[in-house]
Image (cartoon, rainbow, N blue to C red; front, side, top):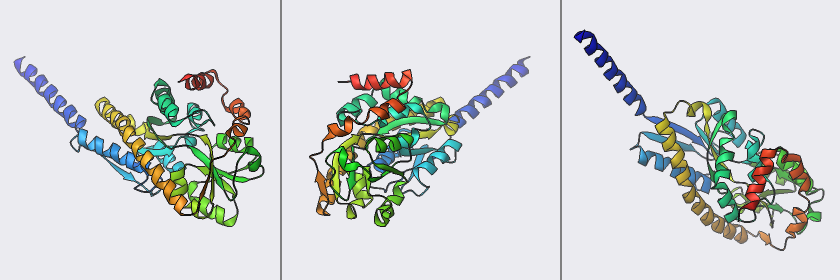
Length: 326
């Protein structure tokens, strides 16, 4: 009897050691981002990686593949879904057709300032939007800043009438196609990497983005008027593969989730610094910032966009909660 007890104890001890070893196994994560190493989102992801390494004494590491090395945002999202890639940083818009709640932060003129956007996304509202993607294969970890998006084209845009018939490049999202249509423009969805050539060939007349993207993509070299419509403050989002997430221990999930959240203030600071630096670069490069834009003419035209996409009680509730934040 004593021998049997000793054997059981030895087996339990071995099992415990095995569990401990598994819990402490080295994890090497792979993450993707479209932009170059100095872009604020990539710097944010690298801070995320640094925090992970520091907090686990190098047990969990993350390599960030920048400059679109692993494909377009759409392609890397597909890789994350099947578990071929652990994480990806994308603008929230490509998620719109995947998980419905991500439509909310993408809506035009939803946020009245960057501060308003931060308050909304740092609240329970933001957590609910991130969590909504899990049934579709993605674990949302954090929102990163992407500034305010405005229209740039070969002529000044001062009111919505100036957009009539303009061939406007938009992200590959139904909502963005609808938004362009509400402006009176002809929507031309395409990946970011194709836009420079599209300007050169006349395939598009205009695009819309934030100042750092306008600068980094070199679009200011071919399109000189940046009109501050500030029609969207759609954030960036960090997504983890649900397939790979389910293989992690609860302890490691907690560490990774917290490191992602803690990288956010750093990324916001990187964004603010880059926004100022990019503005100087585009102005020195001959771009003109058009500030006297009649935003109300654009806002008044967005009713059909809200009517088309904010269709469920849940979406209506989220929109109202965002609008109620002071």
